[in-house]
Length: 327
Picture (cartoon, rainbow, N blue to C red):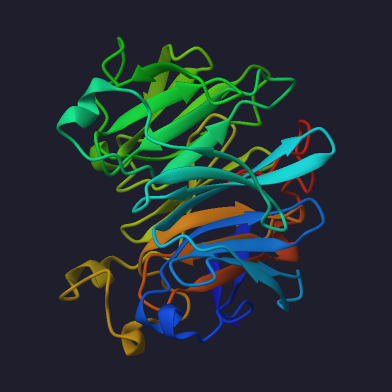
């Protein structure tokens, strides 16, 4: 058995628990960029193929496929009362879409009305929605590949504001790639994976800077997932980082610094992909038992299940706050 991490953060490495359909577009592109887990344990994967959304059972059976998103990128699962929705970002279209778990579109948001786009592309990478603890439903969109901005809209999609990273904080964003509201907090806090600056910036729900962290241990944060008090950060270069309730480093999983030396990385020959080692983690999600799903930016895609081992049983199996999955 191949494992990742050390007790109490110890996982069994499951390489092929979820398999991507071998479609033509999946082989030609198929990059797996986003992943989320629903309340009933279904796993949703967002990849650059047609169809773009894959739905798997916890046992690994492909249940459903839907959607055409050529620039499939960020995937966020949001709970609104008893309902669950998927927010999808398409970096090429570019558009942000809210769908039911079966693929019915409920809202679509185009380019925000910001003057930066008179001379710069808009390429959204991720989305977060303030629904935690009765939040106001504001929608935050990260333009990580275009103007490096974060845009705030109200629950109906009306534009409210933009933040740049310069708001009395750690400094201007450089690829604000993934964003999420932290469910471990009693008041909403927006976590921003400021990938190009190798750090996480934290803002409140009104766009006021609170703090930053990770400058001394992060390399390339892509986004966030949560289980109990544990923060899960997939890092493109080339590992998954775990932090505790105070955002302190507690474990590294699947480290593979040698991959960065491979010509053409992250697009490498499949023969060079090794079990137990990541190549280019891009998205993460955790189920109720603390098992972690990692998807990677790689032609043909890659989905890895890190199954939490019983030797880590003293880790919390239920969140200390209201259950809320975010990828």
